[in-house]
Every structure is written in C-alpha cells, then in structure tokens.
Amino acid sequence: MADKGNLTWRKPRPTTSTASRGQSVEEALRQSEENWRILFESTLDSLVIVDARTKRGMGCNENYARLCGFERLEDAEIAVKLSAFDFIHVDEGNGVLKTVVEDVFGKDVRRIREFCTLTKGGCEIWISTLATRIEYCGTPAALISVRDITERKRAEAQLRAVQENYRTVFENSAVAITVTDAKERIVSWNKFAEGLLGMDKHDLHMKPVRSLYHKGEWKRIRAQNVRRKGMQHCLETRIVKKGGEVIDVNLSISVLKGPDGEITGSIGIITDITERRKAEEGRLKVQEQLHLIGRMAAVGQLAAGVAHELNNPLAAVQGYAQLMSAREDLDESLRSDIQTIYNEAKRACKVTANLLSFSRRHSPEKRPISMNDVIDGILELHAYHMRVSNIEVSTDLSPDLPLTMADFHQMQQVFTNLVTNAEQAMTEVSGRGSLTIRSRKAGDVIQVTFEDNGPGIPEKNLKTIFDPFFTTKEVGKGTGLGLGICFEIVKDHAGRLYAESEPGKGARFVMELPIVSEDEMAGKQAGSTEAQQAQA
Image (cartoon, rainbow, N blue to C red; front, side, top):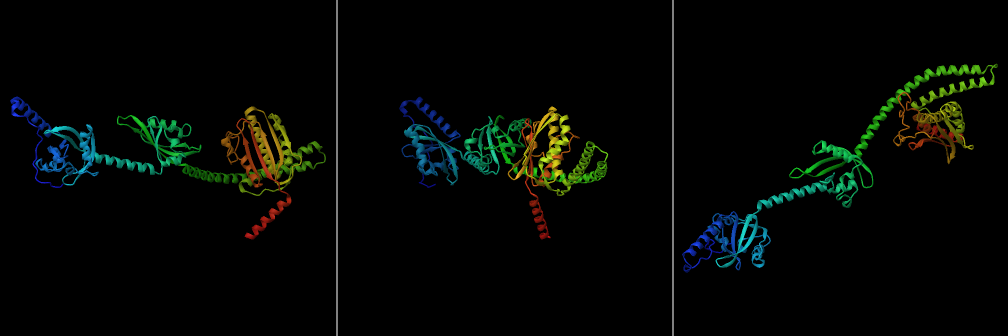
C-alpha cells in the first residue's frame, strides 16, 4: 500500500457535551462512550468507519487491522487515514467500496456485498461487507462490517470444480445415464442415453422411467431393489427404444438419499449388451451344432447297422413274394395282395437307404415322375388307417401337372411323413379331422400343399420345426427326425419345404419343386462332370 505520511490514529469517540450541561450528563455520556468503545473493540466482526463526504477512514478495530495485514492497531493508522479507495484494493476497481458507501447515504438501505481485495502484504482475500449509516463526531459516516469469507469462497470454488468434473464425466460417458426423482420420473440424462434410446429432451423430460423397460421388467427391477434394501445392484434387462426396438442391456441402479435418509431418486447406468448376447447365442448355437454333428454321426452308425439287419429279411420277403406271384394257381386278388407285399418290402428297403442318405449325404436317384401319382400311391396305402382315425381326406390335384425329375421313393417318404403328422395332430386333439391335399403348377415350380384343421403350430416352433431331433411329442412317440429328413430331401431336389400356421386354425405344409426335364437334368450332370474334370 502507498504511504501517505505520518497520520495520527484516533479511536472512535463520539462528541462530548459541554460542562454546562451538568455533571450527571457528562457522566452518562462518558459511560455511553465507554460502552460503545467496548462493543466496537470486542465484536468478532472487522469494523471500519468511513467519512461519507471524503470517503476516508475515520477509525477501525483490531480485527479490521489484522484483516488488512497489520500486526498492531497502531500500525493501521495508515490504512484508516488514507482514502477508502487506497486502503481497499478490488479486482473490479475501487468503485465497489464507493458503491458500498453510496448504498447507505444514497438509498438508505443496508446491502451485503462480496468482492475480492488485497491485504497489506498483497495477499488476495474475499470479504463480505455490510454498511450502516451513522453519525460520528458530528459527521455523516458509514459503519462498515467486514467479514473474511475466503474459506467459504474456496469451498464454493472446489464445489463448482467438483460439479464441473461431474458434469464432464456425466456428459462424456460412453454409457447411458439417467437420473430420476422420488416419483421415478426422469429429470436428467446424458447425450449417450439419447442416442441409445433414440429419444430427445422432449421424449425424456419427466418421463416415467418404468416406461423405458420391456413389459414386466421394471416390476422385477423394483422387487430386486427392495430385497437389496436400496443398495446398488446390477442386472440384465430389456429396454424398448423409441421406434419399438427391444434391446438387451446391463443396468446398474443406485438409490439416491437425502440428508435425513429419505429416498430422493435413483441413478441408472445402462450398457447395451445386445451384440454380446448375439455373440453368446451364436456360440451356444455352434456348440449345439457340434453336439448335433456328434448325434448325427451316431445316427449314421445306427442307420448302417439297422439297414444291414433289415435288408436281409426284407430281401427274403421280396424273394418269396416274387416266387409266390409266379405261381399259376393263384387267383388275381391274391396275386395283387402278394404284389403289394413285394412293393412295400421294396419301399422299406428304400426307407433304410434314405436314412443312410440323410446322414451320409448320398445323391438321390432321380427320374421323370408325376407328383399326382406319388400322392395317389400314399393315399391308397393310408386309406384304411385314415378311415379308422376319422380323418376325411379330400384332394384337388391339377390334371395337367407336368413331370419333373425327382426320386419317387423319397417323395413318397416326404408325403407319408406330412400325412402322418397331420393325422396324429388332429386325432390327439379331437379324435377326428379333415386333410386337404392340393397340387398345381405355379410358374416354374410344382407346388403341393397339405392343409389340416388341427391345433396348429405355435409361432415359436415354426422356425425350428424342421431341425433334426426337434419334436413336441412325448418321449417314445417321436424322434424329431421325420420333418428334418423331409426338409433335407426337398433341399436335395433344389426345392423348399415350409410351414404356415396360426394356433387353433390348423397347419399348412407347402412343398415346392422346380420343374426339371430329363434333358435339363442330363445337361446339368454333364456340366458338373466337366467342371470336376477341369478341377482335377
């Protein structure tokens, strides 16, 4: 601070009365002066008196002297006698102190002001001032109470820094964060949450947090939170984005509490784990496929043994049937029955061969056949069984259906499986039913449909119904191989087999095979042979 010369320090002293007023008045004034001095010196606040006209100091107490950086009250005479604009240094300029004094003498109000100043040693401090109008020594003056609020300002600065750091982390976090109030309404969120949910501030502000979660999920979250007594916990759940897309997320939720322990809200940290779930499902699917390959290898070995054991007796049945049919003393009715035995024994041999073909991927033996003939053949074999099971069968077969290259016995196996499955589904529910079989030419494919009025197929099973070993039947009533074999047979014929159904409204199986002539088949086989030779 600048030194303005040797000035004499005067303690605050009100004007005394003249001796003519009497000894009692003088004594009262001296007592009043002493009381005022004691109060002025003993208060914890730093006090300074400033002349309203000159803006110069007229007196201060020891607390103010120490606040300004003086060790003793006598040393503060320089600060007090200088202009108020000299002994108070402010960042914004000395106009702040002028304003403090003018607040009192211009507007007659008491106003608290806060600003930064420097001490005698140049130390920066924050002070709070409160000025009051007084009359000192017959002169209008301002009594200014000054408090050091440096520590409070530092604490506020630290709090602002913490809040700014929190805001930076909150806004730049790579996970979605939502904050709710006591009524479970969203009151704050970060940008990542908007991106993850596909929502903006209009969608999220005061939105009930439960509406973000898939049906039933928020109730489960609340139940877990209650069991954990409000402690932080993590769980996997599902969230619905703005467009209706459901995603898998990992949710970390913590309850927020007030000073009295009351719940004021919660904070949720949401991480999208949809891709991780897909990867896990893919890994499980690979494991399942590896397990299936092992089972298929076992089926292949079993099929080979079964074929070996069955082919010998079936060959004997075929041989004896041929011998019996060659006898001349047989009537035509018996000869027809023997021929049926021979044909069915031959078809049984084909079935064992097809099972081997399914496991070993052998190519089918294709020739020009009529799908209508295949349908008529299997209906003839199943006619009696259908009547006994109260199944009404109707057909709508196109008379001009073209021939196509296919394996007759494999097509028989496909149609037999479809008819048998329909019959079992209907009889198990109602003990009766109706089955409609249609064939038609649809563009360059032949389409054959099997439609029943049974219980139908649940939607969740439609995607897996053709998987090997998939079955909804009880143990001992099905292996789950039938439709899987049918699917592979149709696939080997470059066709497709699919199912359509609504629960309670029956099922519709559709087989579509490309129309392939014998010449086209020969051309394809020749091209395939040439390609193999070229590679060799």
